[in-house]
Amino acid sequence: MAEYESPARSLTARALALGVPPVATPLGATLRSVGCGAAFRDWYIPEGGREGPRKLQGFRPVDTDHERRRAAEMVEALKSFLADQRDLDWDVLGFTRPIARAALEELAALAEGGP
Image (cartoon, rainbow, N blue to C red; front, side, top):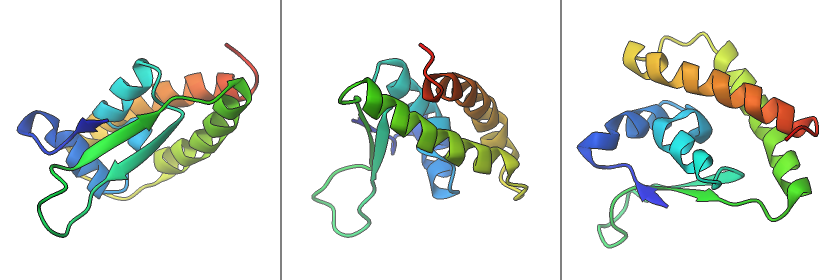
């Protein structure tokens, strides 16, 4: 779990607010690179102040079958995101689309039974 409310992670905050899949954000890519990318939970609770800053939580897969199932789900989300023609902020698109393409390639291979 890592916060994304700091200035250094503002791109992740903006991307998530615009509906970019967590795996296609810079913080999501970082979590996935350390093995915590089977699923994500966005801990954005807008009420009160006791819960601390907004956080993105990445989960490790339970086993290989779980990892492949979740990869297949993320492949569909990434395909939808890449096909979306909404006019998002250029800097958000400029960073998240390359991350999404790389993740799509890796997750598609994983979903099909690859490494």
